[in-house]
Amino acid sequence: MKPVKDWFARLVKSDGIIGNGHFMVRYEDLPAIFRYWDNTYVFNTKRCIGLSLGNDPLSVVVLIYFIYKKINGYISSEILADKFPAFCDQILTLPDHLKEWRPDQLQLQLHDNPGWKTLKPGRAIKEFSGMILSSSGTTGKAKYIYFKHEDLLRNALNVVDRFGFSRGQRLFITVPVTHMFGLGVGVLPAVLASANIFLTGKANIIKFLEGHSVFTPHFTLVSPALCRMAITLKKKVHSRSLYISAGERLDTRSYEAFEDQFGELVNLYGSSELGAIATSPEGDNNKKERWEGALTPLQGIDIQLDKRYGEILCHHPASFTAYLDEEGCRMERSEWHLTKDVGKDCEANAFKVSGRIDHCVNRSGFLISLDEIESKLKGLFPEISGLIVFERPGDQNSGAEIIAVYEKSDAGGPSEEEIKLRSGKNLNKHLVPDAVYLVPEIKKLSSGKPDRNYMKQHITELAG
Amino acid sequence: MEETKKKIKDIIVKDLELSIRESDINDEVSLYDGGIGLDSIAIINLIVELENQFGISFDEAEINAKLFSNINTLAEFIQTKTNSDVLK
Image (cartoon, rainbow over all chains, first blue to last red; front, side, top):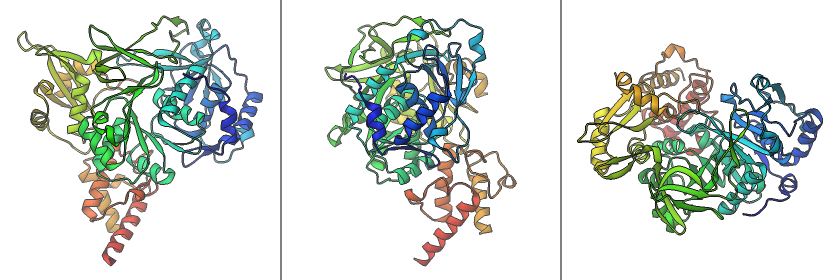
C-alpha cells in the first residue's frame, strides 16, 4: 500500500464541493475555515475530542480538519451524542442552522465531557494520532477502535485505486459518514481524489431518487436495505452510477433485480477494524460471480480461512492499531485479524462470505448460516421491513430449530403461514425456518442493529 | 383540488393502514421527516398507491423531497399530471 502525500494541497486547488442540497462547502474554502478554527479553538492533540456528527457537509469538513491536523477524535453520530466514552475530554457539536456563513467565521461548539473529569486521562490516547470509531457488534457492548490518521488515509487510497475515483467525479453518500463504510469508502477516498461529495441523511427512496436527478453521481454508496426498497418500487433509473453496498449481501434474485433497474452494484466487504477488505468483481462478464457473492481482496490484503471453523482471517497493512477500553487504554490485538465471519470457496484471489460465525448452526450435518437464511427470506419478501433469524434448541432428535421473526409493517405484509409456504417452495430444505413469528416490533440495540439475544429470550411472549 | 387532497389522505389513512386519522393530516405538514413521519416502506407504498388509484406514473426524475413535502404540493402535482394525461 502506498503512503499518502500532499492530499490536502491537491484538494484545495480543486474546484470540488461537499453539498447536500441545502448547504455547500467548496474545497477551496477549507484553508480559510481551518485558519479560523486554528485561531479560535485549542484542540489538545494529546487528548481526544468527542465529535457529534451528522450526514452533512459541515460534519465532513470537521472530519477533514481532524485528519489533516492530526488531532485525536472519537467519531459519534449525533443521534447517540449523549453518550461519550471517558477518554474524550471535550465534545464538539455543530451549529443547527447555517443560513448565512463565512469560511473565516464558521463557529463550532465545544464543551467539557462530564464523564472524563472523574477518570484518569487516557494513557494510550496521548501517544496516538488518530480517529476512534465504536463498534457495538451484535452484543451491544461498545468496542473502541483506534485507527491512525495515516492508516485511514492509506485505506482510503486503496479504495480510490480499486474504484478509480478521480478529480471532478461525483460521489453520492446515502450511508452514515460516522461509520467506516461512509467514512472509509465514501468521504476519505472522495477527498483524496478531489471528487465532489453529495450527502443525504436518513435515506429513503425519495431522497435516493432526488439525489440521482440533482447530482447525477458517478458512484453511489447505498445500504442493502435501501437497495431492497428501491427494487420494490420497480422504477428504472437511467444512471451511469456504480452502486457500492456493504454489510449483509443481497440474495442473488434481489441483486439481479437491482442491477436491472438501476445499474451495476458492487458488494464491498469490510469492517470497522479493517476498513475496506474486498469487493465483488465489476463488469458484465462477472455478473454471475458478483451476484453469487464472489469477493476479491483489495491490493496488499491477504485472506485465509481458519482450518477448524472456516473463519475468515485477514492481514491488512493499513488496519486499526488497537482496541481501547473506556479510559483509552490499549488492548491487545493479533496480527491476523479474526473477522468472526465464516468464509468459503477461498482460492488464490477470491473468496465468499457465508455469514457471522456466531450465526451458524449445524443442521443435519450441514453448517448453515443464519445470515444466509435471513438474506434469502428478505429477498423473497422485500415488503417486510424487519426480519431476523436465530436458532432455538430443539429436542434430541431434531437438533436446533431455526426461527424467523419479522415485524409488522405499517403497510401490512405476508402472514406467518405465507412465509412458511413460500420459503418451503423456494429455498433449499436446510434453509427453511421451523417456525415463523410475527411481532409488533423487533427490539433494537443503541446501534440500530436487532437485539437478537432479547428477541430470542422473549419470542414466545412477544409473538403472543 | 379538494377532492384530490381528500383522496390522497384516504390512501394514507386507509391503504397504508397507519395509526393516524384523516383529521390529523394537515395540508401543509411534511409527510415524512418532522411531519406525519411516513417510514421508508410506507413512502414506497404511498407512491405505488398514488400511481394505481390516480392512474398516473411518476417519472423517476419527478420523485423529490419538495413534491412529497406535503399534501398541497402532492395534490397540485397529481392534478396537473392527470389533466395533462387527459389532454393526451
